[in-house]
Length: 568
Image (tube, rainbow, N blue to C red; front, top):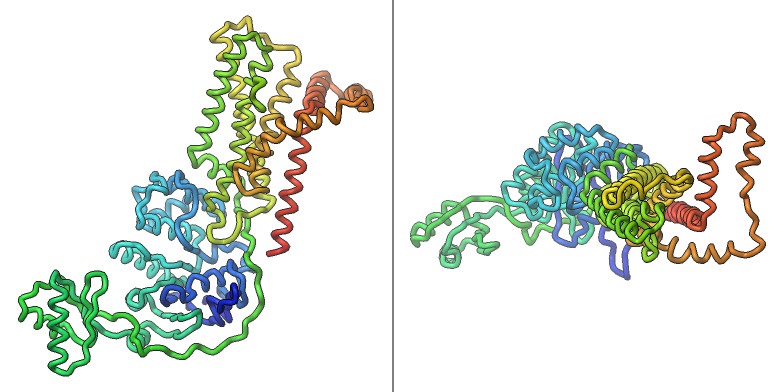
């Protein structure tokens, strides 16, 4: 049972509330239609139920408010607007990513693909799907967690008749299995054909809540729908005969279809036969709401508690799996990595020709670039991890901002670090192979201090990736993440060099020796080399600046997340 009690939206700019004291029920095992003209508050009512709109009121899903449902995806399936997510992701990739977010097995994605009739389109990019397939994909995403209740905003809008029939068959099957279905529509005929109960809205207030048979009998008028190439001629004849017979008849035309209120198929058919007018379609149906059907608003219930503007969305139930599917499901990851490797190899060959030192050539880091290509690529991949969440929201489509929980952040940092390490190793390997191919192995000897060089190189790429993740997470854009990466070498490193170049700066050069004395025989020579390499890498201005930058971004991320949580 879905119960909405006293839903009232917050008015804006001295206007009346879009929804005012709305109370109704949607029982299980039935399809409930929320009907009303455009601007009547249907969408706002759904958003109030999902706690996405500022206002008052309560909504219970099987006796529990939304905030007390531990796993909302397993209780409520929502379709608001178009299909969320990156348009380059495939149908199967999109659903498997969302399955990880909902905490269900990846096989569930294939089940809902078959259930909604998307078989054969699994490998199709979501951005290339036709309108009908898009709506089925949105419904498939809503069904992933096997929810009890489905809330859909205008699911049949813009669909062909055959697509609407298929959609409502899916909704009917869900209701017949014991689920609750609530959908909005502007078309009373749609509600009369497909719903079991109808909740009528007008001006944000309840004007009727009744079974569909009572709705069709009391609030709709019977009419005859005629499709003919001579609609104007037939309309004039029907109206003339009705006036002669003193019968109340109203004749209108909608979308090329002649609608006759107050007549029947026999009368209209006889008139068309006498005129010799061909008729392509002639059917009796229920039409638009009668002009006299108003109805008093329902009783005003208590308004319940006041809510904030938005409810924070929970993190994915399987954040690491979600992030892996997000990264590997779009072509941008492979394109960025391939571009970074190609540019790095070309720069390495150019630097090797000029007799540049081997470490600089392997890193492909000329003076004209603020960072080597591999570090820039790692930073861009890190920035996209949050930037794409905000540009193509899939986790929180229609449900507020992207989640800013610790589990999701740790998953993004872990995946970004792995990608950065792979990119750093592949770039160094590709650069070394290119140098040996062009100049021979004698020009690429292994230096003695390769350990601190390797630590510095890996730390630089991972640090850039993390700076991109945190920068994009704080400022909600991939461009901001890239700017955070570039800020370190362009502005932070020169400033830090000026601060640390004074004569009063102390040195920690003897720290490894002092630690060796404390540890005694347990301190091995290999550990000494690695620890010395880490210290040398961290003591460099770039390492210190990157560490400070990451600390600042992490603090900003935590503070902004706590502030939003407190406000919500």
